[in-house]
Image (cartoon, rainbow, N blue to C red; front, side, top):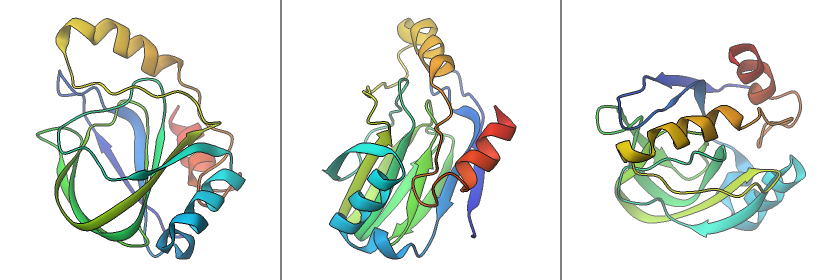
Length: 165
């Protein structure tokens, strides 16, 4: 099971996370919206939606997020404005720990399936310094999920995130 991992530093606005971002490539179920929703749900990642990725820097302070690229392609910045640019395509899955900045820079016919561990409620934050204390408290209270959205209980979320937490 090949997975790429990336860690981004807190930049003062976008907190990011000490847990690594996970990037899976060529996931068969992530090439079809219904199959991707089913894969995420069977591994406990629920509350699925279909849409794109916001074109402004943001993060979620109350939930980790799985994003399956089920159609098209996108250039995405992870880690905030000083983060890293990624080229994503159909079949890729991102797993973003709570607090990880993300922003769509460009896309072509993009369709994304998103989901959250146990269908937890999520928020959208943009790095407002007046919300900093609340955001950090939220992120610190988000538990490590019991399963990886792609590979279940034996996947990298269990392996890498529990070790990093």
